[in-house]
Image 1: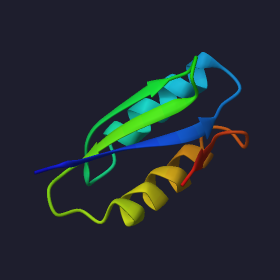
Image 2 (image 1 turned 180 degrees about the vertical axis):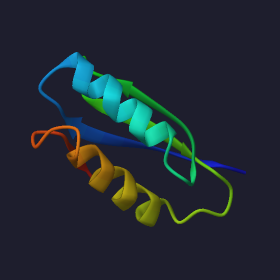
Image 3 (image 1 turned 90 degrees about the horizontal axis):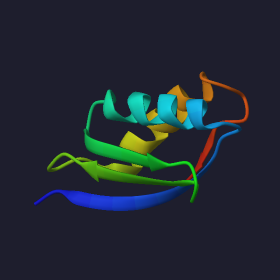
Length: 74
């Protein structure tokens, strides 16, 4: 059974939020990620057996490359 978690995030614009969603979805261990810019919430479903904290650290590092203001609060 896969695990789903919600995370707050910060982004300056909807385009950055869309890029964050794309980055999350292309990260190993993520089954599906959905970003809502209006609520500044990212919902991530993880693949079975994944350590979600380690996966999210990877997502977080990759998202910081989009813009310095992009942050995910774990």
